[in-house]
Length: 275
Image (cartoon, rainbow, N blue to C red; front, side, top):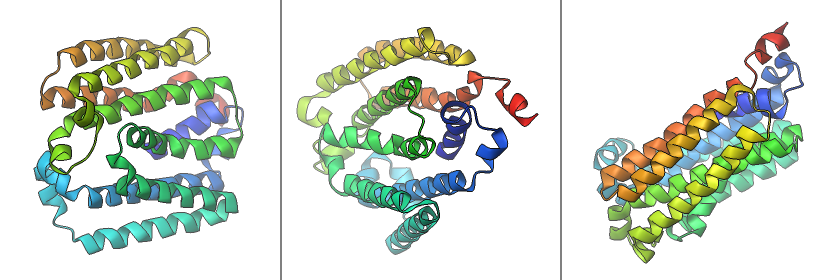
């Protein structure tokens, strides 16, 4: 999904004036996307490795399936994926090698240490989630304001999603001594933080609808505004884990649909650039 988002963002947002063929067949772009995918896959493995005991409480079925693969195999795969990612990045430039090396370290440091730190852990996790788009952004050197507004919208959504996950996983976090926001400050305070983030997310949504040319993608942002308002109502009424799972899924749907909605920026763009 992230690889698809990187390509669509490159075609429609970051390099809209380049011929479609030159973007899709750009070997450097392919290498950057492939390296991002490998590092993210490795990130899921190392995160799973450190969360094994917590997931036994929060996600027992998933944990039982995970145990079919040995810890040694997981770690070996993790190192192999990261090595291949850095090796591929070396084809593009030394700066790409430095970026992906830092990205790998950041994911490990988050999984090992920062995840247990309230606020900072959530913020860092959201930054790691948008990092693959940053490398494409730097590659094309496109600094249009609309790109930053898109990035803020995505970052705030992901950050709210991270805080919802803390509410969803509170039982396992409490058992393993994680100092998350709902554990330290209470569920009500955590829900207030999420609500504030969602309200802030409405700002870039309205800006993208009113002040920027995003083609028919404005329909997506209008739908997002209504979904986020519904999210706030449901958040206020939520009291159980299943409610937080629903809220988590609403944000996940907004993010995933947003990837495909990039196509709406210019529905004729692909046809025009092919011919």
